[in-house]
Length: 464
Image 1 (tube, rainbow, N blue to C red):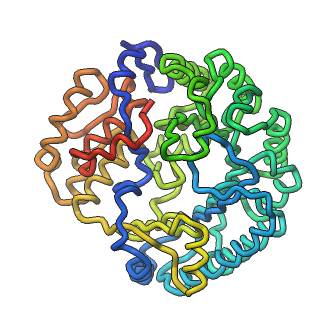
Image 2: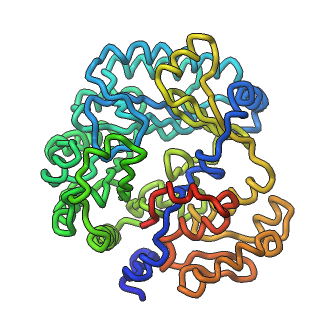
Image 3: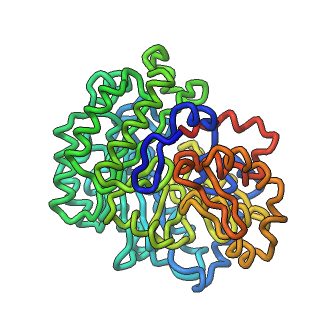
């Protein structure tokens, strides 16, 4: 069934992909965010923040800026569509109060190794507003000298002067939203963005010292075909970003209102969509990009590729990470934190966020305290997602279990993947084979206790 092999990832034929192409989580956490409960809220988060000590190490910090000036029809992010720039001020006021409340409770080190601004469109903020936000953060959470500081940018509101301002503030990585360069596709999803304006933003980043540029692409959008996306890839390779994220569009209009504006008849067929994906993987790997996992690619010399090669790769709510498995503080509406053996998420609605901040409450609305079983399964799933292999001995020593006994049922359920040549279960390792790397989410799902007899699996996007 093998078609081509590049950088130790094998591209299965469409029949094998179709067989194992099921809905599944992206495993930016385990348990996944849809398992969080309201019983874990502000009080529980505050207690775990206070329990941190210096042994907990440095922090990762995420800030959610929800505002966008226009709606992209495909988008499933938590966002607020507005052209009213004055909305930024009250939001920064609230972020400052939340940062102060978190800082007051936080124990242990507070130096930030990893910072990420996401959204929405963080570059909705003006240069002065970005400076104010960084001043709010660095007054409470100092940045490490050689940290990774990244921001998601929309080139339509990121001219060169804003890139210069970001560099001056210490950002060293840029994630550029592109999705597709084809004009017909752009019109169909209401995101008109020229190649020229995108290149201008990327050129400015390189001219002002950014270490890495990531480009986000989406396949499966309306009006896309293998031929049109091939032309988009031509332009992407001309720009030569250090990293590429190739996301699968999940059309779920019943859950995400903006997607109702997409004409279903314009979506590519399943075979065409699969062809787009396979073509893209072949083009990227042939161009020297290493397949990191799922939908991420990086040039061989990039930090992400090196981290995977050296066994240092991690995964969190921003995707793959080169930094240690830090505690994560999430600020802003809908942000997620990971502190010790806990996850928590802020309220999703802006008005409720403002209301809680006004009443002096941290806006954590739900979360989870992981038990021993969660921790064992998280370690196993994250090893698969990041390194395509699990050392049974490492799991046994860390969690005081016998791997084959503990996962007896799961290892039996791996048999179809083994028979298809996707995974190998040996005495000491569970190893995802080159043919199975594109389907690693499905393999990881075998170890997810929450998915057993759970109808919610239908709500996830498909793997391929």
